[in-house]
Amino acid sequence: MTRASWGGSFWDGYTRTFLRGGLAVIAASNLFGVATDLAHDQRGPWSHPFAPEWLLSLGGSPLVGVLLAVGLGALWRFARQPGQVRAGVVALLTMALLVEADAALNEGPKRHFFAPGLALLGWIVGLAFARLSAWRAGQHEAVDVQWLEAHAEMGAVAALAGNYVDAVGSKLLHVGAHWANDTTLRSIVLAHHTLGDPSLAGRYAAFVAGNAPVAQALSIATLLVQGGACLMLLGLRWRLIAGLAIFLFHSNVELLTGIGYGPARTLLLLFCLPWPRFMPQLVRWWPRARTLFEPAHPVTKPSLSGTQLAQVGALVVGVVAVVVLFAQVVPIRAYAAMHHSYHGERAGPRPQQ
Amino acid sequence: MMPPPDSLPSRILLGVLVLTGYVAIANAVQQLYPFSVFDMYAHQATSASRIGVRDATGALSEVSAWTAWHCDAPIRLQEPPTQPGPAPYTIPYRDREAQEWVLAHPGNGAQHVEVVRHVWWLQPLPNQNEAEDRVLLRCQAERQ
Image (cartoon, rainbow over all chains, first blue to last red; front, side, top):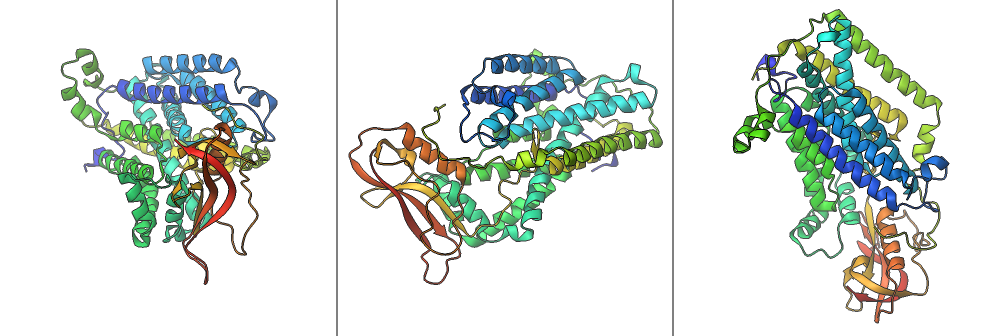
């Protein structure tokens, strides 16, 4: 790896229209999914006992359709124009509102909705960081959109990596390295996989559940792959290797438990594969698509000193610190702890979706 | 294509800040979209269990493989412990899916079946079987 490739991207030298559009499409698909769930949701003894009335009232409400339209409109604008912070924020807030309403009505958040939201958040933070850097350098009026989106891409990749670092951190904090023993993964597989599944996946799940050394090896691999997500920040090859490793991890989990995490896997492919290197050949018969992968004009960068960069970084650290402190003051952890707690036996069936 | 070298330090700094910032905020709030600690499987378990159907032939299958349910009572998810020792590991939403399936698919099935909690003990105690069935309910149903 050359020195210049540290922190670099396959998209350097290309416009990131495909990347931005792909993120918007995945987020839109998720937004539609959660809105569909929410349109059928009803409150009951399974709903969060301390959720605010206005949040619970979204279940089955026509307002869900309005929010869906607002979110999709914002994502359309986000996809069409580079450097769109405001449209990204509107889309993210809409997704957050719908996902939190669905979580309040249904005993807890559905984690497969999270990856597009956190990637979008990372993209927005990257844009804001680059704009702030350009402003600090006194060149905010002529800032290059490619330079902005190079940072947006890094922000999205870093947020995706944070997702997996959190997952491995939770395991190590709660259980320690002993999580990778010879029973935990087997119990997860047995508790999830379809009973009496005669398929190849069923036989594979039974093999892992019945084979302690194999299960332990897969558990160790889980910790390494999730922790290795940090490597995605380092550059082209590391991003490809770590991203594909996590994709394979998700695929294996789906075979073993049926838990797919499709949006996360799609985002990994979107951000980690070297699309500009092979897509121009694949779409050479489609001129409009080919324009997505044509080299961009040379980037003009703000001349930012190390001190100015450190000041922008310190501001970001300060914002994170304020949010962390604020979370200690408001009872948000207590609210989150009440998710996934069952609040009484059901009196009847929930509507089938 | 070579990356624009001047932007790399700022991108690496941004990447580190976003990653650590996400982890810090997620741990502060635990769950608030899009922040999460993703602790769904951050536990240790030496057992597993599933609610299933034991039919007259002794085969174990999913509750959702059956329909036309006729039971005298709903499935109780919090069954009383049948023996001393730790409770088996359960996935609450899978249990509730089974419970809801039975409630949502009533009928006049003719086959006598047992709804059981099948438990696997991965580190069985002395005199404990590696697997056991705890009968939750006796019903009549039909295979789909």
